[in-house]
Image 1 (cartoon, rainbow, N blue to C red):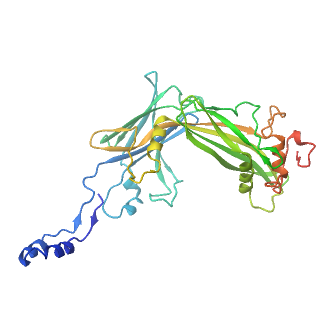
Image 2: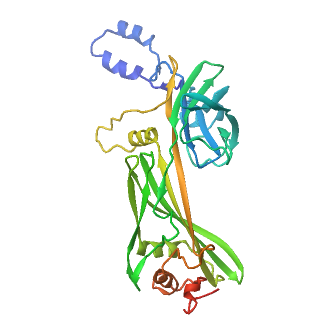
Length: 373
């Protein structure tokens, strides 16, 4: 429990001098207590966050406790033991049509990637996980139940989620290509349609990959992410995300390596990454978004349950990451193009990126000055 200390005796003295005799005042002074408990009784609280992803094989659940102790809260937050339960036993159970199909016991692991500039202890943090394999991933028709027993059953936390699935994009077909210019210097936008499946929130991101060369045949792969946006969606509907042509070339310029020894660059691929989130995840994100009200009064949300006399915060839900990679050279059909010829010419010779040594290895540019097989 965190105790705050303050001296109230001086304030009492000034106030009572106006009304009480010296005798009464002296009696009061002998009973002054300088410690005030501003928190009250502490309610043991579990902190649980977990997102299952059918497209992944390692599924991680974060299980912590709300820390408690006397003294400086910022100092306590740097102590791992203050943020962790002594004993954690957790399982994930898969139910298909109401029947138990599979069950996994979560295993703890120590991760080393936590930002050391935060309030809580770092860079190590304990996580709990289970694995699936590529031949038997999470079932899109399954219901997954999380059961956590903490400190030998003192605290019991339960949650369940369905699996987000069935996301697709208009870029799935081989004929899809990006068009960023209509004519030299005249930039256009390209829409990418994403089918939401059973998700309630969608994010679309492009990952642009290219090679940089300092000598022939010795290239280093570079990449950058282009976030196209995130939005609420209704399940089984389509959402269009727009790519702006000028933005593409400006991002390329901003993300090349500043190395004067680089004398050639080649575009390699563009990944379309669509990520959908479940209804409980969407509700949790909505409730915890920054408040626009001056009152700053916000509700709380969790889809987790806990036994009596304890509390839980967090969410157990699902997301799905769907990736389509369009290569600059389609090995199965070289005639097909990821990027239109005019857009390639703009990359290699245009006013924004024309001095970055980009060239084209596509047979369609064989007759141009920027062809480099």
